[in-house]
Amino acid sequence: MKIAVVGATGMVGREILKVLEERQVEISELIPVASERSVGKAIEFNGKPFKVVSMEDAIAMKPNIALFSAGGDTSKKWAPEFAKVGTVVIDNSSAWRMDENIPLVVPEINADVITLEDKIIANPNCSTIQLVLALSPLHTAYGLNRVVVSTYQSISGTGVKAVRQMENERNGKTGEMAYPYAIDQNCLPHCDAFLENGYTKEEMKLVNETRKILRDGTIGITATAVRVPVKGGHSESVNVRFNEDYTLTEVRQLLHNTEGLVLQDNTDTNTYPMPLYAHGKDEVFVGRLRRDDSDVNTLNMWIVADNLRKGAATNAVQIAQYWISKFGSVKQ
Ligand code: A2P
Image (cartoon, rainbow, N blue to C red):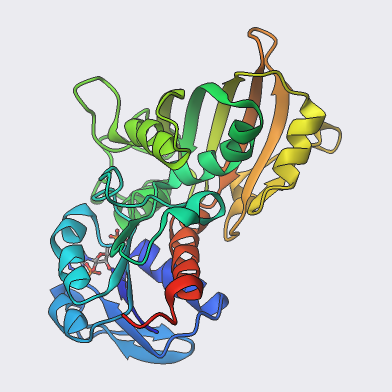
């Protein structure tokens, strides 16, 4: 397997390299790719140095898989060029997610939508991945009627510039701003750009991507996405109304039995998910399960995951592993 990592010098790209190492994905040739300003620089993988190459050089090497995390515009322009030489692109940007011909995949839920003909596969948004992983078993059991989600999103989701902004603020320095306001000691109800309907792009990603992954356009979903001064890990307060009634015992059992989910739900011992502890882990953590008595068949829960791991790198690498196990031996 020749694997290219496009955006290998970025926050998610570096995490992808780490996850590929940890999962011991069999790679015959690693091709790190970044912008022209990084070409020739060395990055380390499995203890060895690898030189960063340009997009053109990477395409000429015809990788089997390219894991893209270099922004939407780069992806729109270059993913089809890789696809033309037979590479399967697993794209972490929002460029292709809502294209009806492109599968949008959380492997534990819908890996089965991937076919050998798919040359671009989209990795969902970080806040969507952790949400759908917890919602999916409940949707199957009771049918989702309406979901109200409020997010508490880490600055690492914005990239290196945001991490630097918060560090500068904490050290009393001025510098380049990733956000329109200070982020330390603050909460910004503003993740990604505002749209005409008054929502942000991040909020609409939660709505549209959830419906696509769960294959149900009728689910009512509304979202408020908030950026908080947390270095790593997104949290979500989720209120869900089901079509059918449930018991908390059954919900706990369903979540406990779901691959990739960890139930942390014991108020007697102050056990609940927190970004500090989800940091660096691949699982999605869920807890604070309680009945919402103000409405019928309604549940409250709290979901936390490392946005750079399951929210981005881990999910992308899992898609690659699924593809390798299913189609890796098929002659292209
Ligand atoms: P570079 O480091 O050379 O700028 P982040 O989101 O953390 O800022 O990372 C973005 C990643 O995408 C980096 O690896 C960056 O490379 C890469 N990148 C940005 N623009 C391009 C481009 N036009 N072609 C290839 N890689 C790009």
